[in-house]
Image (cartoon, rainbow, N blue to C red):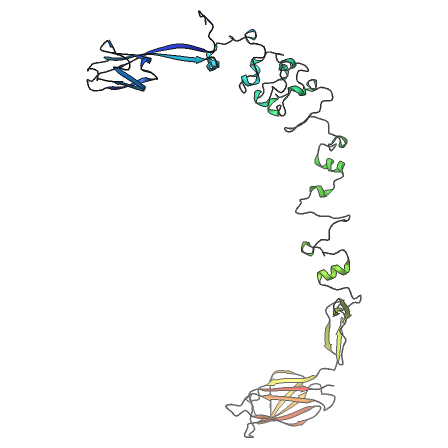
Length: 427
């Protein structure tokens, strides 16, 4: 703007006029203004067209106007005419207060625009002429991540060789600051070391093992090139080793499925077992850490099969003709019938016939006679009733039959309802 007189130094001072009108009531002495005033003289107060004396007729405090006497009743008869000065510093001018294209290159003193004078993201791609930013226009370290709008720097905005290591702040260039396709091979100096910390790389030849790659485009070929077997694809919680050997590890503890030892003797001790006795049979511990092999040996009259248990479970049986029990039977001596009467056995072995010859008298005939008379008889009867238990008396025995009788305690012959017979012989 044009002005007369000396150039203003730092601030622009101007007055802002305005007016408030109030209705007097004849009783009200205080009115609320629309502006905040610092002094009584910041406004001219008129009541019924008469100018009032500041500090004598009225006073102001902030937005409150106070009269020493209440103005007369009237409509808009109290007027407050503002004459407040407003001071605007140059630094208070905002971007919206500056017309477009008013600040040109020749209006800016050399070095006047520094990093602190540029708002974050205020310099965008549209605000830069092609090749406007060159190496000699950038202060070392002045371009940081916060000063570059996302996608603002494209290939056509960068002069050839303009961006060097010294011109780029540490960490200033990230993947979000580089437009798609903005960096090509022509933008990279020969031998420049490129550090890629994010994003992805595509469309390149498989990186060889010598260059830190795998030389492959798929996982299977990569594992083959690197000499990694199936172990590389197994879960860490479920590893299966089907060949080779494991060496140089700490002894695997018993709790982890190992023996906790590096030799057989210590392993047996840790596992609470003993050494193999060497022979087939049943292992028997004789003393601490010592075992022998045992087998089942047949005694007199016995036959043992699979004595050492190798071919099956061992079995022990009586030899042929060596059974101790030669005959037995369970009969009802009280069966109804006319004597002599053949008793029907409830159960029997090697007894061909049992005859009740008379009351209380019985004869038993063998199916296969014993070899000698060296056999023993075991005869029992059920109680006859009450306290009259009774007894059995052997009358005669031969290799073909034996005879016995049953009596009450009083000696009377009787037919018990249950008689058990057993014949024993060692031959």
